[in-house]
Length: 482
Image 1 (cartoon, rainbow, N blue to C red):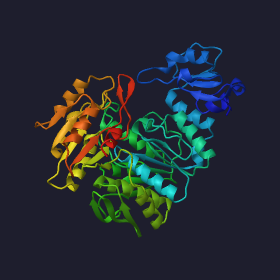
Image 2: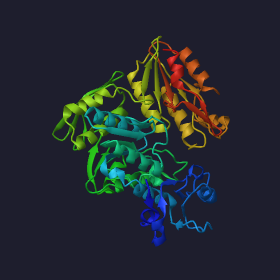
Image 3: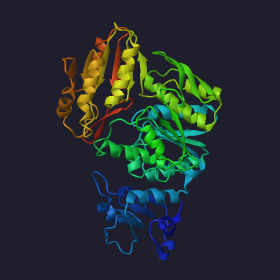
Image 4: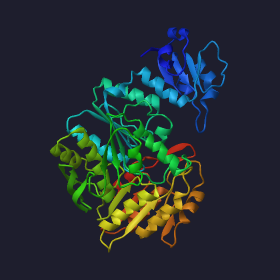
């Protein structure tokens, strides 16, 4: 696919007429991946600055370069100077692929917790209803004809536009995507046309990246400012930030909540370790829910999903069947039953709020005579303040905690462990330097009807250590005990 340089950059600068004679066949931000005819965008990053690789990009065949204003001294190669190369990457990639998201119904989901589960529920129900639906998020790209490869929660702007172009050509009607605060802050989704936006909740997270909770909130709220008057904002009013977000969008607002009143809510529920049953009330509409998902926070995720499906206009029976058919979410309160009667729960929880929700749910549902064993660690080079908070919450609900590596990255594991154990007030933990050893120790200790909760990694199949991804699968170890 070729476009003239003039056409691609006309919204960024007053382009020169000579640009009409320059064809661009691709866009890259990685100089190593540049091919002849590409436009190279020099993006400043956390570790590397694309401006340091401009000449390498040209030697690989870059036809033109976008920079942040500094002179790259690359005549006669055209240099387009802009204030924000990340924003430019979104604009030009959208134009290169003919703004494909405008021809698809796009549902964006943002919030600290619940994005993945809500996305699975919506996508599953839409597919069951006969719509050709793609899903983009933490667990990868889930779409007919695509390999499910795990990536960033939200891919970069160029790849995202390319994906939408492919979805459009393959006649996908709907895309359900998780939208991270990083993606919003870095303009990855700036030129995606969202029809629906969902706000799940906001709790402390990514404060190693965002300087404050207010900055974190502002990043999340961008999604709702992107909606047009024809869009719909689905907002959790049980979260204190819900009303504020509602005031910042011109779109129609639908509230859902744990309560009742005028919001979309459960009018009755029965929640056990076998699942959630109940009736959701949305104005004059009623939706009968019978889900195998467990926990109060999954009630909120189901409410979010049903609110979207209700806004789309699916029939009551279709929504009920769609929710019921989504029997589990990979790595999200995923339950495995072992031959000795022990239950193992795997969950991606990696924030204090998520720990409290997951462990509190299980404590509420388990018999008082049985025990909960917690297995967790903390990611290296990430928000360090949450580490002792997670331990403090874990000891409230767990009989014993097994502290393990969880993607230590470039940080000393002893320093991570020290931060975690500072939160314990009683001797209820043991430290392991091999995650497999911790899992096997807990599996050997647990008895019938006890629960082992493995937190943090979900279905990840690696440990990230000093720039390398070393194979490790909690799921593989669990299978050996089934």
